[in-house]
Image 1 (cartoon, helix red, strand yellow):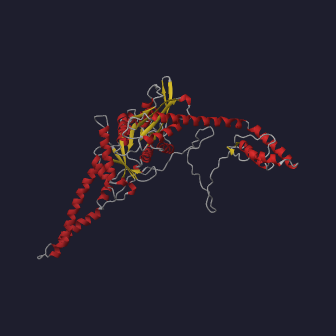
Image 2: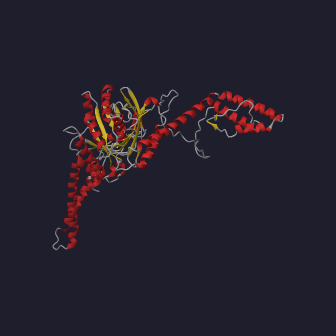
Image 3: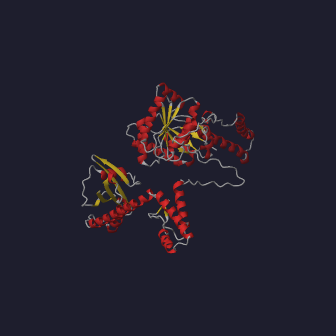
Length: 557
């Protein structure tokens, strides 16, 4: 029995309820539905189960998006009412025709609803009866096939002996027009001795089809790849983890990735002017004045080379002063030595925690794996924490990196609180003796306040040792805006009086910008955080330090 049906607006203004139903609902299923599904826009299933003391309800609903109306039906879960979906659809159609935004009372809809309810119940009853009629046919299929086969034999004898054609035609009419439905005859009986007009050929074909459909299971049809005459055999394109017959994953043994020494440990050599070139400049500058010394009469043409040399000399001094200023800007205000800090935390008996933050698609997970590879080369035990519980495939992506690097990963799946997942990951790292926990977070835009609040909570709850902002060098000054707003939001939304801000910067895709390195200078100048890593490729070794002299030389070209 239907417990209640009501119509209300998206602003929760109730327009109509069925007064004849009038059943007092136990608990507050409607309020729970609004809080749990409608406000959070989790309306894909359009069905919700509510448990209250002494009662269990199922709530079904539908929307009218243009009018902003919600139609909700409530009934006892144990009843399994078949007509509710059909009734909601009819109520939605009828009510939308009489709806007026200025109107708040719809008492005249009671009679319309009663009529719609009767129609829906009648349709459901007809469907139920038709299903009951169809059941005996399925159960007695073998017996009917025997009857049909007997009829075929009798019919063949009649045809050979010149039996009456009138009966044959009548029996054929009985059988004609009865198609197969899912391999079964459609609710009709072929009695013993009933023969089609064709003398049994058609019946025999139908029986064979029925018996084949029952005896042979359907084979799964798979699409075959096109094979060209001169092309080699294609390799397997499905890289998902294989599953055995009992449902367990057969993950193949993966050899730990060894791509050589990380670029972080290689010193980049920057070519500078040789001593001889500097000596030549000094000698050239002095020779200009020596050439005009001792002349009694000096003309303008004599002074031009000396004046040009003097101008170049002064410009060189200005460039040197600018170079010193740029070096001071790019040099961090505080020194961050991750390897030293990791060993210091290890002596204190706790893991060193690094949180990677940034906007969508900048390469946080990939560069997290590069940092893990670099730490592994220094004999540091690393564990990954999959705290991107929002983006589809994020956990699987990090799991692939962990499997290739042969390091543990802590994951809880999707739709979990990232702050709690990170906290449990740090606790797990303390138990299994991991030295470093690398926390992967979901990408978010700097203006998305709910997601920025969740990130601020994660940092506040777990108090990581290092917060790394991952930004794209390719986007230029947009990365500067992202970094400054991340810092601002982390400060404004943190419950702590002394909020944690960005500690360091990881610039990705640095190999794609050539001499456009101004973004790195601006990010360091605005935030005061150093550029600790630079991503310059797609392999695990493509991570290096920011060479200040190289940046300054590029800027002053």
